[in-house]
Length: 76
Image (cartoon, rainbow, N blue to C red; front, side, top):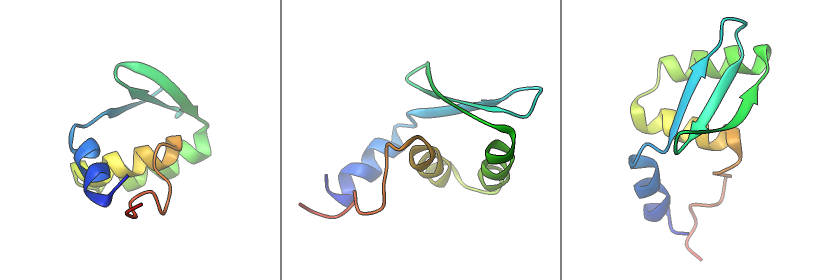
């Protein structure tokens, strides 16, 4: 997948997240929950998400769920 393909997919905003009252994070893709992060990981990721723009939020969520790994953006 080329770098442009990855960026285009992330522009579609496929990931959403929600923090629970117990400070866990639920991550959704296409309105289906795909992952739950524990308190420590969730708080750390949430701090980064709060100061990021929309594209970087999508990138962080994609990395957290394993949908984007370093090197995926290289042309094949």
